[in-house]
Picture (cartoon, rainbow, N blue to C red):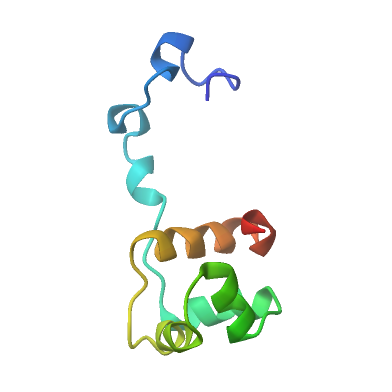
Length: 91
C-alpha cells in the first residue's frame, strides 16, 4: 500500500482494520455451492485436484459444491481469491 501511495509510510508500518475500513469485510463474500463448482470447473480441475490445492478432502469439496456445508474461514478466503484472480493466484 505504501508503494502505491495509498497511505503514508508512517501508517504503513502497522495496518489496522481502521485503515482498511469496509474493504476488510469484502475480502471474503459468501459463496453458494453452485458458485464453488463454477470456480472449480472454470479452472478445469477435478474435485480431487481442487481439494489438494485447497488442502481439503474430496468429500469436503463435494459437500461445499452441494451446499451441504458452507465455506468458512481460510477456505472461504481462498475461494474468493480464486474467483477474482483465477487458480494461478494460489499456485
